[in-house]
Amino acid sequence: MARIPGGGIAARNPFGPDWGAKRGQETSGSQSVGQQVQGELFGKKKPPVLDEDDADISRLMGRLHTYRKKLARLAGDQESDYDLVLSAGTIASIDGEGLIYVGKNFLLNLADALEVQVGVLAHEIGHRPKRWSEYKQKVALTKSEKEELCRLEETRADYFAGKALAELDIDCEPLIQFLAAVQTMPHPEYFPPHVRADCIREGFRDGKRKAGNQKRFFPELARMTSAKGDLGIG
Image (cartoon, rainbow, N blue to C red; front, side, top):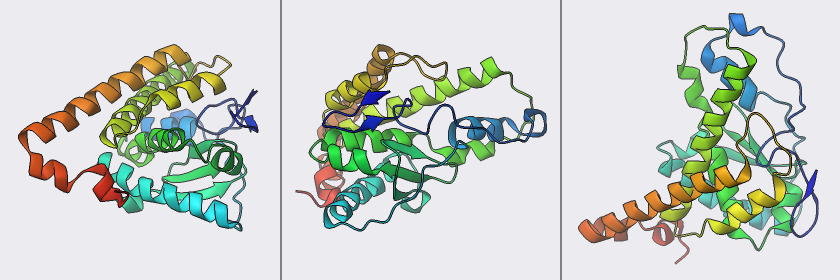
């Protein structure tokens, strides 16, 4: 286990449910590839949902909801494809329907680390779990094949997190530092933190390049769709 900077215990999985949670009982041979991957990544035991019974929690969840809407659009999805709930988990996780569980400890202990909270939220939305339902082919995947697909999926989510942070004009380094602090145990579904850091930085560079080109060639469009204006924060 690792401690969240500022206090609290982090789950082994840096941005998701516990690794040791039980999978569904349905055999892989009767499931599509999409169902198998959804079960591996998003079908794990969900943390208990908590009431937002505190003014600070409501304010912080409201802030994340604002970014949720923008991140959904950056991912090419509808705002309604995702929602947030406060949970007893320590960081964040997403289920197969796009519901994101935000850990109470994570929300409060990193209240001043907006870069980290938006980066984690971007990672979860970067999974785009509903799209896996489009994979209908039925092939029984081996354990190693599912782990390989999970690593690919986590890489996609990391890349999107970096790209989205760049388009939001938010530094990606705090997210990378947080990841290095909480991912302390190796796991076959994840690349090591330094590899994930490279992926996040690559996405960030691509996002910066896209934003720069838009400002250069389409200044009016860039002004109309700027992160600060779109989010109502500037």
